[in-house]
Length: 64
Image (tube, rainbow, N blue to C red; front, side):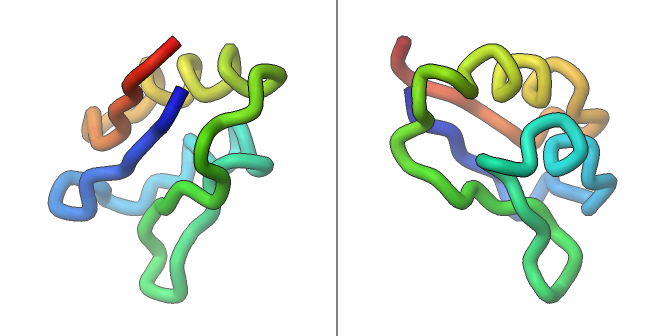
């Protein structure tokens, strides 16, 4: 699984970072980014949760 954050949609709420800090972090500008690629299997559930909880729908995933 690979994740990406659309920088044009991200508003910097940080929910993804709170949900899965091993995969997501905030840039110096306060927007989310993916730190790990591809996503380790042990984090797929948390990444899927972050996708569903993102208020801006800025996170997308591809793969299993």
